[in-house]
Length: 235
Image 1 (cartoon, rainbow, N blue to C red):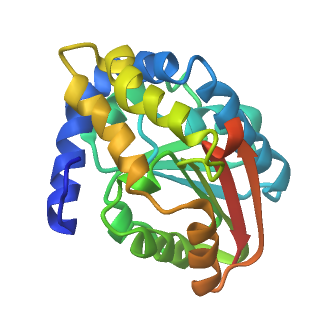
Image 2: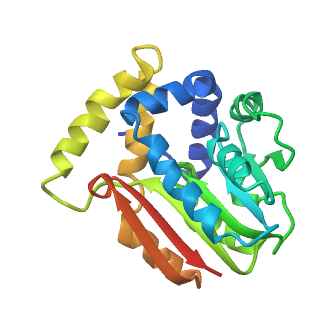
């Protein structure tokens, strides 16, 4: 297991995503056995139905832009901004923009979001919080840039709470998933996806962090025995 200090983690994760950006989407689809599209759809549907008319959404750690693009397609009255610290990932996102006029892209760090305060109706982060070097700081930044009454959404991978499921989870995500996603060439990079989840907060810990940061009306939706969870809360 890789042990990284906070200042090391940002650089390490940056290098990973700069390396795998061109294969990221296909690799993600393989390692999730195609399920990642349905997990992301859960978040998109929430944003689609719960964001007010003519509002704006910030997609933090947007990666190759799936959430940003799909939401912009579904709700063309919204302005959707994708922000990511990897230029290579953003380049992949821009390739599939589909000429949507309600999308903006920003290269920036989740720990210090380069956008105005209290500017967005909602902010989301999907499979990205565990890759940041400071979970509390990232969520605090997201809260800072949304308007009062706005919602924070976090969709991410978690170690399932069910102890009967955990051995099968570890077998797949530690030993099979890195080969399926990256093969021999990028095995190390995809092994990090397991390690980052293993080191991540448990579901209840993240709920507690939401509470600590003052978020209200906290709700969660679990998929795949708790291996994927969407947690939301209002400012």
